[in-house]
Image 1 (cartoon, rainbow, N blue to C red):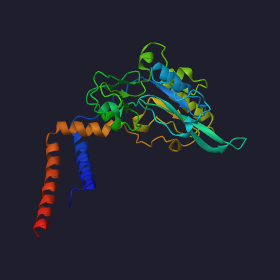
Image 2: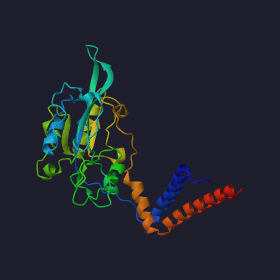
Image 3: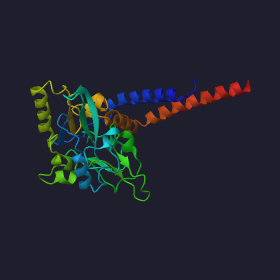
Amino acid sequence: MGLTRRNFLKIIGAAGATTALSASKGAAWESKSPVDPYGCLVDLTRCIGCRKCEQACSESNKLPPPITENCDCEVFDEKRRPDEKAFTVVNRYFTGELDSFDKPIPLYVKVQCMHCNDPACVSACIAGALTKQNSGAVKYDVSKCIGCRYCMAACPFEIPAYEYYDPITPRIRKCTFCYEKIAKKGGVPACASICPKEAITFGKKEIIFNLAKKRIKEDPGKYIDHIYGEQEAGGTSWLYISPIDFTKLDFPALPDQPMPKLSETIQHSLFNYLWSPMVLFGILGGIMYKTNKNKDKKGGA
């Protein structure tokens, strides 16, 4: 059997499963989610695509201004992602329905860091530059960052961006959840404070979650029965309610369990059971030896 990429991944997966089972005898994974965090509810039926949230975010974080402040522009022709120069963006989709003038009805979706309850980026950061705060924010400390960019690979929402253009002092960049404003009593994220249609509601997560459930219950014809962020990736600080399925809006379909749960369980188990990496590398070494031996036989034939 050759050591193909597929075979290698099978071995890693089997070893990971074995290690995860052994973890029940060792250190069990524990959630680091704060007890009473803040959150934001985004009601997609209320967003009009004015992009004032983009403008407020840029001003608050001293970022370049949005491409244009004119709502009637071509910026919606392409789907955008948050990057090092824009911590939040608004994209346009269509519901499939027509208005009274037979024009497609648009639906606008705000995108930013979801500030997961148990963030994969925090789990992946080997330097402790990313931490989950009691407020619900995932905070970044540039003084601890070593530029490994593991957080970028770990994030299921593909949010963290890197300042590739800055070779001297590059940083990881993403929505801060206006941490400093929230930390001060009465503070509200810039995007939530400026929304003219109250499409963004900020408050204690439990309160805004109940608000989301109330809106869905009171108007079931207006919303689908799904609060995105309630369960996805173990839950997020940003919650969404929508009139159409989230898969049609490019929201990733994610498992309910926190993303770091399996990875941290395996990691802790490997360190708790020193034999685990020895067995794993022994298996790989044996396969490589057998593969090379078979090649030598064929070459000598």
